Image 1: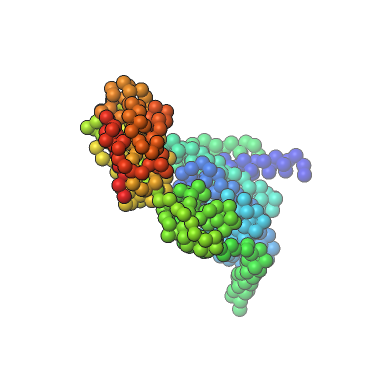
Image 2: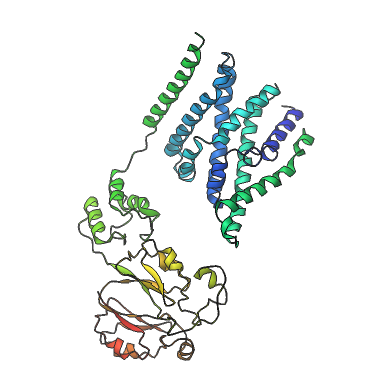
Amino acid sequence: MDAQSVKTLVAIFLAAILTENYVLNKFLGICPFLGVSKKLDTAFGMSCAVTVVMVIATAVTWPLYTYLLVPNGLEYLQTIVFILVIAALVQLLETVLRKYMPPLYSALGIYLPLITTNCAVLGVTMLVLEKGAADPSFGFVQSLVNAFGSGVGFLVAMLLFAGVRERLEDCDIPETFRGLPITLVAASLVAVSFLGFNGLVDRLM
Amino acid sequence: MEFITPIVLVGVIGLLAGVILAVASIVMAVPKDEKAEALEEILPGANCGACGYSGCPGYAAAMSKGEAQPGLCSPGGPAVAKKCAEILGGGDVEMEIKCALVRCMGSYDNTADKMEYDGLEGCNAAVLLAGGSSSCLSGCMGLGDCVRACEYGAVEVCNGVAKIDPALCKACGKCVSACPKGLITLAPVKKQAVVRCHNCDKGKAVMDVCKVGCISCTKCVKTCPEGAIAMENGCAAVDPKKCTGCGQCVESCPRHVITLLDV
């Protein structure tokens, strides 16, 4: 692997975290972002589970799409096939974890069913195919790096926001804003701050 | 006929996923602990943690492994303890019924606040500011962290002091850990004398802030025919095991801070 392709992979990784953050730029996976970000430790556990599932899902759906759907001209089936595959995959992962890694299961297990129908996971696997269509050099390895970066980006967004929410707990918030409204306002501010990364990765490429 | 391929493809993928999942669930089945499941059925399911384990499933698992004794579940009481013992086959279990007890009588009639507290709601926040709003440093502030901690609605704040309803109290101990002053304890439910004060200061300091606080005069210690009362850190404390509930200490106390617990 030459220096140029390593550089490209790093750029893909950083882009997935900062400029193309699935939560804060694409607004996918908002449900766990608002639901599980009340505490730092649960936010961390959930994000780790999402990262693992994103990488494994991409590792399965990418070959499935490229070698099964495209040759048969069935690209339009990707949504239903991907949902099917991801749901089965998460269930399988849960079974494997429960059997062979009980500590990890007790840490991540409760989040896995939540991820089964997570749109961020589906988004990662599907949007990466658009990139591959636009740029033929964007292959399997690049897709995996992108998936891992997206997971880390989810983790960053969750941890940042969990920190913000823990601070919000102690604030004297006007009554009408308490609860979900102030959470959404805070989420939008965090999202706006991520706009500042725009153009950063283009320079790296 | 071009619709055959997609139908077959999705069908095959779905079938394949189903078969893999079915095989995986058989091959990687985790043996279930039937005893633990039966025990969990019996436990109240409140997950209060009074037993010292992480919720009812944790306690059930510990019991089935023999790591824990039945009878630690205070919300369940003797009935649950007996059923658990039956499943474990260990014979009868003696279980002491307990109830939360607030060791303070510092109502607004007996003591006054030293300041008007207007900060974050709750005792644990208020206590950070010069030891809390009540003029007695050990006294109940009546800001109700115990009320919020109680899942059974057994605690209320009356006239500035927390009050437990023994009929509703399950002795889960949540209020005990919620109180920043350590005022609440779990006391056995029986006819016994209890000291309703937790102030460890010297007599003069107590007299200055409260009409009823224990001034460690040790009259009760001398009066008790059973030797059940001792001074602990400058405050009288009754040993429930020795106390017969005769009530002599109640009469002797010049501060009227000892009361009889009636059952």
